[in-house]
Image (tube, rainbow, N blue to C red):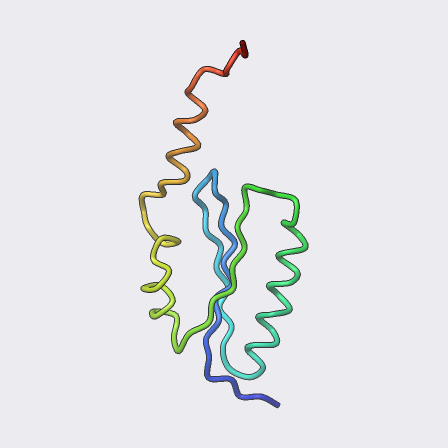
Length: 94
């Protein structure tokens, strides 16, 4: 059995809602368990362009939150963009 020292975070991020679901994997067989969960999430959201799936590993979860801080920002620029885009009039063509 593998005693993995790496912490993995599986992130499933809804771009429109700015909603983040994170799952942490650490300890025994963390890498294998994280990869399995990542592959399942990728299959589940394969055709959904509004969902971003990422698997990030580091020495601890705080490092991941520093290096990928945009996932935890309170002001989500993508969500704001989608809201503003919805307010624009639809193009009517030439």
